[in-house]
Image (tube, rainbow, N blue to C red):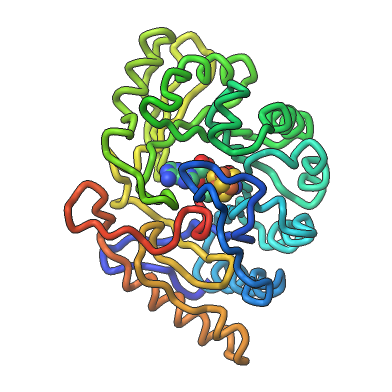
Length: 327
Ligand code: SAM
Ligand code: SF4
């Protein structure tokens, strides 16, 4: 390692999110419009060798030590295990975020390729509501995917549930019970203004305090010492496991954020909510050296702002929605 990715506020960046595709077999209400999205042309997507090159530069030059693959839906990208194998060879903490539909048939291959941990998104445990939210009748497939991930030995298996007031917050306790029974950590995510339709309002956000109070009223909880992770973790005092809450809206973790992102079409973002992007793909395809790419990445991180301003009037929504950035 020769250097670190430090921004103007002293934050060192070591956690890389890579979106491997903008395509998805779901059209979740809070992420994609009902009519679907215009997919990026295939030629614009980074090839596996290009993704690997950027990841290698980040690991070797800057000590990046965590890589999360996301999308769109990463499991719809053909030959995903081939990419996992390339990235696993870099020796970082490698994880995948998925809607879980393809796991029943893919979990073993992903593990064989070197995947260790997984986050599965699941916003309702009720079949009718699940279908309404995702516009796919696939709850059974996702639940089977969770079980397949556990059986394949992925650890930890975490469930990500975006909580929306009046939509699914009546399932908080059902999720808590499901996590306790299955031995998986459920991470409740505050709804963020990255929905494709631009319908987000602050009132729809179910806050960390409310989530902890409502679950803790039934199953007492105590906080777990926070590390640099974005989730605030709580453990059940009866030993029944943990929950996490990603409070991006009410308790922004910008001060300790160490995340950087690469979109499926090769644009580097220094924040989920960034309005500017840095064109790594252009350098990958014009014969630039690793050094020139490293310089662009360093410059991009140096330009990072202090934090997003979701709760303030000057907040500007990024042009891309969550499925195009990679959650
Ligand atoms: N398709 C995969 C999945 O659903 O897990 C990976 C991509 S998805 C964009 C990543 C995560 O972003 C999911 O957990 C999803 O629930 C979350 N997400 C999408 N839109 C969101 C929003 N407006 N607010 C909060 N989380 C959101
Ligand atoms: Fe697809 Fe994930 Fe967005 Fe749902 S949240 S539409 S599964 S990318």
